[in-house]
Length: 142
Image 1: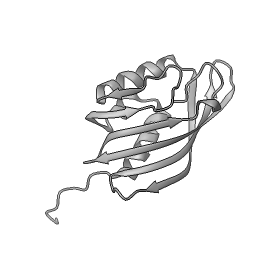
Image 2: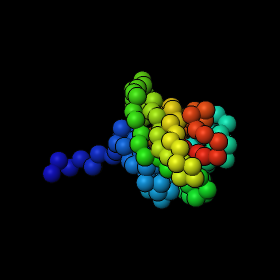
Image 3: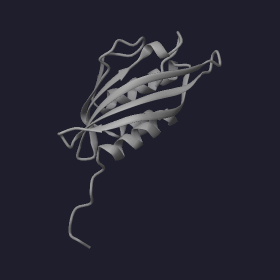
Image 4: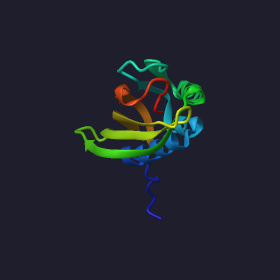
């Protein structure tokens, strides 16, 4: 034993768990990645999505409601790039979420940009820029 405390997950580890929770549509797993007082913002207007969730429990409730009402079933998240920043807590992620709208069988592809701040192994601030133009009417990507 080294006597050192166990390493906390960094931004890249949290990103992998974040993506798994999105694909599983697990509001509990997703909320578990957030600090109790975290903020998740959606800077671009997106139908059916509030401008922000404040705190872990709002994230849980917001995603549970969103996924319960949405016909969009994400099936894959394609990583375009992950950019390190001068701040070791922050990464910038370019990705595309693809899947199917179960009501029509139509595919969707929604490009997005995430800015994730991870402190002590938990998300403390997320800016989630989704490109709604890639989604047919009547659905949300995640």
